[in-house]
Amino acid sequence: MKLIHWTPKENKSQVLENGILITDTWISCSILTPFKNLNRWWLDFLLNDKEYVGIIFELEENDFPLVHDHWIVEGHSETNDDLEVIAKTRYSLKEILSSNPKSVFGNLTKLKQGYEQTIVWRIGNTIDDSNYLDKDGIYKSDDKKIIESGLKLIKSNPKKAAKDFFDNPDFMEFVFEDYEILLFTNVEPNRIEKVIQANTNYSYNDLMNEIKTHYNKAYS
Image (cartoon, rainbow, N blue to C red; front, top):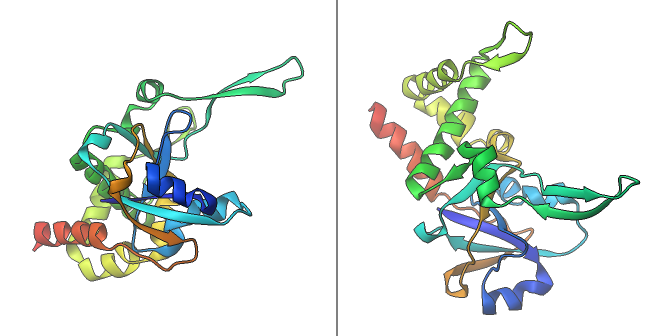
């Protein structure tokens, strides 16, 4: 599994010399995919005028534990009497583990399983919306039924699953558009494999091919 970390272009030389260093609690990056728009989603979302480059590197076991989830709120905010924010403190790994343990992964196997399950859940939710109102009038999801629906489609029609979902850039962007990985260890410079420009149509297919192969073997 490869990750991409976006940094302002003026930081390129420093990163190549020293690696990707933690600044204020963690390093933010995302899983590299075959889809250009998803890979650079954060750049488009932030609407920053700076020129960025993408730093690509392989995820290793010593990077764990890490967080993989929707965008993480920055953390604690301290305000003055006028309710103006005067200081911010990012959540630590311990705090995230306490408040949202499902977002913390201890090894690569668990992370891949979570990534796959997120895709399967979204496939199931797209073809069979199993949301329901509970006794308090709050919408809930029957996650077990949703995943079963996703797996059923993958098993019965793998070509449709690939065309409409696994290989569909719009769908995959819908699933993972605001996801990020938070690393709590530095990335040494010798781990950097490639540096790309923000507009480079660079794709990484190994992970998605691995997922599709897994399901093809499981249901063949």
